[in-house]
Length: 453
Image 1: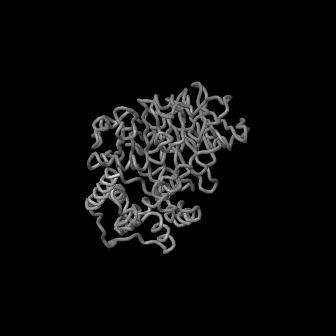
Image 2: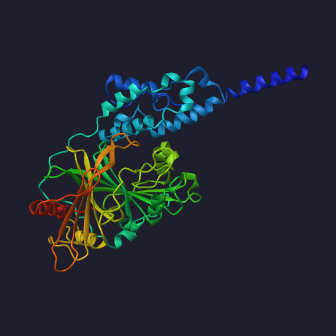
């Protein structure tokens, strides 16, 4: 009994001593708090401010060491990532981007942390709260009217400059071969008015085809190319100014510390590395953390592969009949557009001959040709899909069920361009008049390839 008493006494003393080892958590008044309606502020204060603000809000049990040490670590890390007490000092676009990311973290169940809400149930964000945040953000704002002036930026042709792009600050090298990769999917982002092509190298494409992406195999490379959206004179939304390229390179061992992926981002037509130092990669891993079950990849690649469990690939968008004269999803993508009124998205694909032809005649790059006669062997395909909300990102839309597939091709020297269209629920060939065929061929051939550096 005496020994037990001594042990208890020693434990109490040790516990008391530990309470004195208490590094501080800075408390500061808000300097530039987010400006939002009171009901939105209330939701954020309830669910986010405990960690993501300079206003310290600890329960009595959070003050007890050693739990206090864990709380302090989480709070300091959370403030570094997002601080609502200073968010108002950033540009409006950056503020909205932070709010959209926060809503997605909530929607995907990543925030607030489950271990936090178990002890602080009052911090839970209800479905009603989440919908209020979504309604407040209201993506899909109307775009500015189109400009009739040509682009002021000189977009370089593909030259050796791509092989001179500096590596990211974490050592990840730029891959100049990205333009030869195939399209995995497209994204229409209403939260920041951008379009994205998501491309994959041969290893990634084969993994998608076979459904072997849980996890992705070593050697898979993904490129995400972003453009600003631009309203055209035809009433459609097209890719405009080039913004950036992001790379994800899978190597489970080499990049073990960053979730098995190497991350890089290069911005502007000069492809300047984004990161000031190697710590930038934490932005990537934290943002992608909610998709740990999908090997940290947001994209739902278009594929016919059947994968059990949660939706990992986009079967609907890949559901093209095998009876088509070509399978365009295996070709290279040239551009895309969205019809806001019809809620459709379309991507222009081409075989190798057609891709080279379209790039050579692009007045915004190296070529200045204006021929409308395809070279022999060239084939273009314009695939249109209904859109649906991206289940992985609020404010984004992705392709859903195919609506039409239009082909423009030239088979032999003695022939003119040919037009075919497949439409309806079963995507069967439809008869069209000569006038309608000529109009649609002119439209397809008039599409300008999206700007690349």
